[in-house]
Image (cartoon, rainbow, N blue to C red; front, side, top):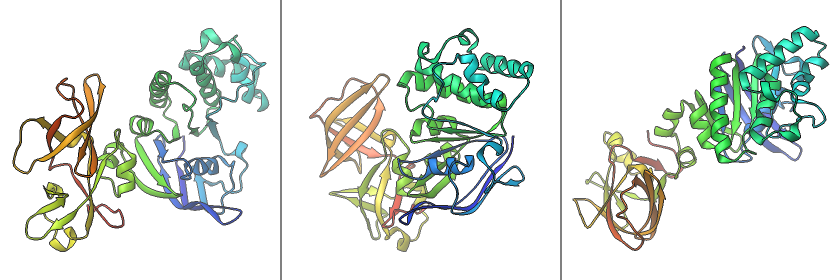
Length: 361
């Protein structure tokens, strides 16, 4: 395994398209780091630059103790797993797994040992003599991962490897990749636009937008303490509610339409000048409390538009004044469309953003 370091890395395409802007990042030995963000944010470009498939415009990429800017991909000692399985249809699973080792002229005995070891790790032993056309999507993806394992690289690079799988297979493969990393301990960089993959797989996640790193941290840290409204809105299902608001002087409250909402506890020590810069309050759906036919001091009233049952939980979408808010609550069977409800925000979990979208904490 090896540490991977990016120092002020930039990628500019033809007509001044700045795809990646001054990305600096250190990925520790044996770490599983996830790059996450919307399509076009630059995450796959970063991965391809680490692999050597894209030439960087400026900056340095260091793998282990080598600057690899000018080193060919095949000499960087990395293995990449793509969204497309890229298996040879005329070859068996065994031959697909061994192909890279054949090209590197690895001795047959060692080659066979590596293939069998990878097949055992991934549960492919009974599939070694099948061809890709006889495999399911999940099996094909395991073969693609196995082809990377047999190379015994210093770094694994995963580029949205689960995007072509259905929801059940994605969940299964997430678990398999997590187990694989725990077992092998190889430095791994994983790219996805799926926040669930990012939150469940990453030891750290890197949020990107428009080629710029927005925030780096553990999944829980980034979820609970987003640096700006972009990060806050991207992570979380259902997404965070954002409401336009303004501070009411001398009251420790914000105005939300006709209602007053207390300053969230984590911001209570901020001076009035800082609170006056707030333009938006954010509250996650799970931090909204709802009651029917029960009011409390400072409560907000609304009308239910949609109820989405999710088994033990349900999503409640409500009209509150001219805004639509989403809450996630325990299933009770008592809520239905057109019902008037009272709601309140958990004062320990609100977020305040200024006009530039930055979190005040």
